[in-house]
Image 1 (tube, helix red, strand yellow):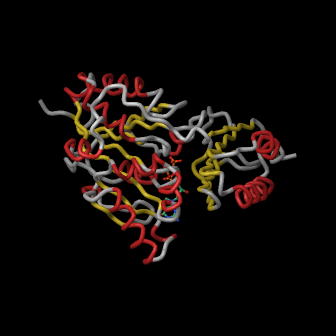
Image 2 (cartoon, helix red, strand yellow):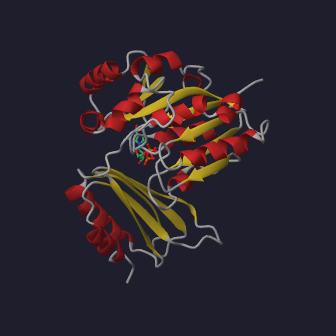
Image 3 (cartoon, protein in one colour):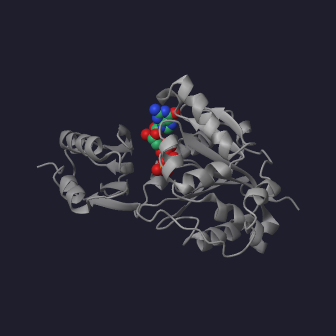
Length: 320
Ligand SMILES: Nc1nc2c(ncn2[C@@H]2O[C@H](COP(=O)(O)OP(=O)(O)OP(=O)(O)O)[C@@H](O)[C@H]2O)c(=O)[nH]1
């Protein structure tokens, strides 16, 4: 029986996973995907940042896909399998903080899942600007590279040619066999990431002999936390810009990722804000839907977050 191919998109916070996912979903490939998105923050932002498509998007919040919500993943996958034929493949975007091992393990140790789905490839997006620091301080960032069958060395516009060569060397030291593609904005021919048939259990077992053992224990950098803030009243765009610039300039080393969907006063379009350390960008997107309450929401993920100060700062962005 044909098993449904599953692609796992991983990579550290802000590397370009959603950008890649949106590329896959908007390209004309004649395939239908079921999409599973998992995020670390408490409020669903990632799900909203995925382009609107005919595909079904399953959201798994409040936890890391590799720990607490793995049961959810199994439930979603088994539910999907009952509706086989309605889609050709499954895409799973993990949080940037996930160790991909337990996600991959799901496809080998859960009998139901194993019978009906096969892990096609682990695709890891790497942020050329930040990966050297992450390789030094994050076990998850290393695991994401070690597990990859395909690597997008992304954000080439933010690194020099020498940086990229050096980074490729660092990646090779962790993973000798993955295909590495240099990309900007996760632009890549989709046949380089999908339908690869690339996942190789023997390779994984060679560096992680415990891989198939149920109850594989792993730990997280639990000094990383997230805070989600919401505002019911519209915000003042200038106040917000001044505040977020000063926060990211002063605390951007600790704030690994920030993102939000904001309602500015006198604006009918949603403003999408994105930050990765000190770098940020933002854009008006589609109009707020008539039945969509215009609630601004923003999430910060990082270390040493000063929650009261962030809260007070965000509240002060309200339009007077
Ligand atoms: N300069 C630059 N920015 C990029 C590139 N690729 C993505 N970005 C930007 O980086 C930010 C994060 O991109 P996402 O695709 O949301 O990253 P992600 O890995 O899904 O982020 P998380 O889900 O929060 O871990 C966005 O503002 C993107 O527009 C690139 O090649 N160059």
